[in-house]
Length: 426
Image (tube, rainbow, N blue to C red; front, side, top):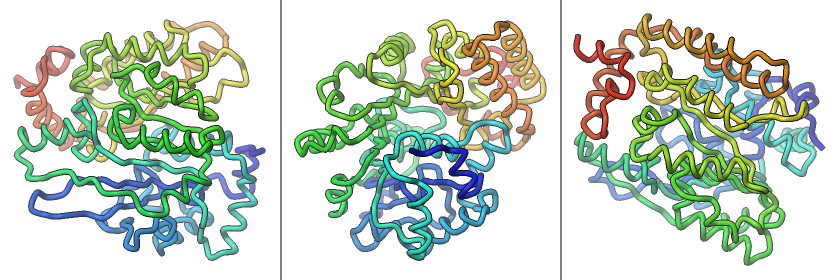
């Protein structure tokens, strides 16, 4: 029904569809240990960045009303006026696109154009006539809990219970997690929603995720709903087979940031043998679609080609020309902790990372769709590194944080990536 090029022609190439159709709904949060509570929030997406703490808070127990505040309506209007790169809260996507890699804005637009059963342009035009107010949540990102069995280096306590424990014990932060009940109109939203993106936390292990799936199955709504789950591949999707078979479609977003020890370091608590086993299960599953998300940092930048070769050798990618633009592997520069990004790479390591990527690219030589996809993937990695300048302040902060992370890791960064060793002994 929807063609993305036509949508961009009608609404502008810098439109983001999420503020019009989506909602990132969060019912948990990390708060100071001497504070009693924090309200639920509903934001345009998971990576919107605001310096105003309560900007997206729900104040009247209504998700729908929370999506029609002055902030939401202004963001919709700004996108309609083509002001994407000027929207301060959207600077993460703006940075991605200026760095030459695909942003969540572009990924989400493509996703919604592909899977929403509505006329997107007509619906946006209708919203414009209603003072940019929206009454239906068509795609819901649901974030009920931070429960997670990993303590990833680039993560925060709000997204991982294990990371929260690390922040309290190793960093001395005085904080706690609050888990709120859902707002009353969530039930009505579930009756009409077309897409639910479960996030967290490790979604496959969250009881709230299972409760929502069970409710949708019992009400015979699941057959009309596409669900996505964000996973660290610590558990098998086969365990959820009986639930998944009821839904219109199931998509797994698998977080893999490196092969072997480097992946285990960045995603502390993971075991590569387990991650590999469950990821390969997903990649060959008969009806679950799989997307890999690679979070690019200064930690794994030197080992990107190991991940690329693993994905390539396991035949993960497009086989038909029509799939060349599909999202199989997303490159996501780390955000909110900028000092862990590739801006922390000193010149010698930056050059080494780029050399390894170029050599890897040169080794992929055929004209097949598959090889073309992987050359483009490597080009995205190269583009991010080349467009991100070295920042000495980031480098200093990177070394300081890694020194703390090493105390909780089985191996130090210098052990899993020896090229970094001289920088910790100088």
